[in-house]
Length: 350
Image (cartoon, rainbow, N blue to C red; front, side, top):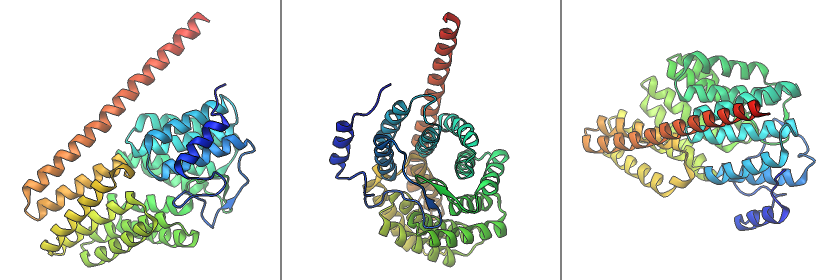
């Protein structure tokens, strides 16, 4: 069974300027409303999980995937079911931000079985929330809403976890965003306001920024550009304070869109340029799905401003990113098929 040797892990952490026992600035932590369980008894594995969370927070997909793979090899199969459940869910989250639906869903299917085997409702809710998010991302309305509602159903009144998982504010936020897209605006508003309330109580800056951004999108759907602008400004302030560039760029391009819809054309153009500069500066810390969303919103905003050249540039960016995501999905699907064929051949020869 392969494992990451203690010396190798120490090198990784020292290079990052981190100590495993003390979360660094920006590292994912559990909110105040969820009970913190002791870490895994395997101290090496706990250190690997902490390193993974740091890389995920920075949206370093390659290093996150490498560390998760090392941790899974250390655990083994079947190994520690709880540890595998956390690791598979984390890998699915990384794959989600890279737009790799098929591979992410395969990990979540395994994590779901493990969570039910453990009879851990917090982990079950986590898996359903992530599945809903994946289906929402590919606009699969038949599956997204049922999974998110299942997450809400399974989330316990007294949640507890060893490491960061989906919390109640995440589930309400995802439901609110999805219902906004469906045009069910009253229900969306209820879930988004609840998400903001819970995120504030939990002391979760990213979730607070996401809630303000989502409320801004809801206000735009209602034709309330000034209200949307205020929401995006609040989201930007929180995201910048937390150094969360992924939601920061979403909020910046949302602000430009709100200015355009308010008829403030010059301000909107300046805001778009600022958002684009921010994206270019922090691209390494921003997921491909977010970059694709940025290009879509920026193209629509420039078109509304009458800048067809700017719109075409962003449409081109959207197409390149979407093609990259699609190519990766095809590549992983072919790899999966090859792995299945190899497994079948090995069984036949056994």
